[in-house]
Image (cartoon, rainbow, N blue to C red):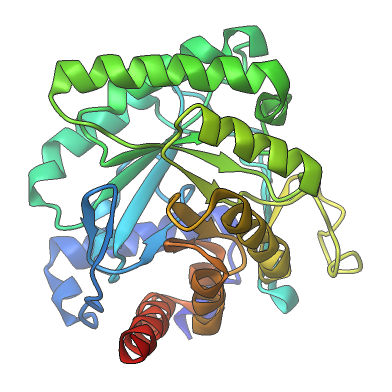
Amino acid sequence: MARRLLFLLPPERAHDLTLGSLDWLEATKASRLLPTRIDNPHSLWGIQFPNAVGLAAGLDKNADHVAGLAALGFGFLELGTVTPRAQPGNPAPRLFRLPSHDALINRMGFNNKGVDHLCERLRAIRASLSIPIGVNIGKNRDTPLTGAIDDYRHNLAAVYSVADYVAVNLSSPNTPGLRDLQEGQALIDLVRQLKIEQKKQSRANGHYVPLVVKIAPDLTPEALHTLVDVLLGEAIDGVIATNTTLSRAGVAKASHAEESGGLSGAPLREQATAVVRQIRRQAGPDWPIIAAGGITKASDAAEKIHAGANLCQLYTGLIFQGPSLVRKAAQAVCEINDENSSLS
């Protein structure tokens, strides 16, 4: 009932109300009435994840709602995308529902309060959190591609002490030219400079924070192979597959399908899973993969793990299916582990 009422509101307004409700539940301790988290520990990069199902970047860009979101039973949260300076993003309307397809189209454009705000928020609550926190970083819209390295290095240095891992967003379709950083010398130069910054921050902070790259689902198999080769060769710690798609396959006749932006939700599932499979075949069994894209049912999370992912993330599925999806997805992954244990 609550979800039906929220869907009568514009998507961004409903989004804000939902996050506000989570804050209220946490402030009044009513969040204790929510179902308990599925505990199915996973270790990655030496970090203990209580379960394998996390929140994808985009829902809480500024670390303003961390406690409420953590209470939903996630095994980890990824915050952001955050940029060096605050920016408003693209003009509204910029978020569209395709309810018959369990899908969203967004062209938000990295709207956020800036990296300093996020870091301040995380410093205030970090000690009270029981799950890992990833931070997704991007460049400001008005930063030319030639200056992108400086934006990413600035962000990495800023968030290093408050993040358990850092995700480099090179794949949002809503910042002009951003996806060009996934290719050629621009990619090589960027990841090399980020590895230098990572090493510098590791010495300064006394611990190592993994660095992963979030990639698009729209790469050709050949371009994906080249991209993964570069990431492996430059010792990037893992990959998030995938971001939203520019494709409208399967939704072309839906209301709002003509809107520009990235498509997420159920129509992305097969495309994103195929990317995970290709990466796992190429990278071998040990390179960390976080799968995102199209998880709207518990079985979709299991599919991502079967395809080779270590962890998975959801966002759009949460909008359409509600918080119960988190627990159901975590349980589905837990059952895979139980099956594997019984066979070993």
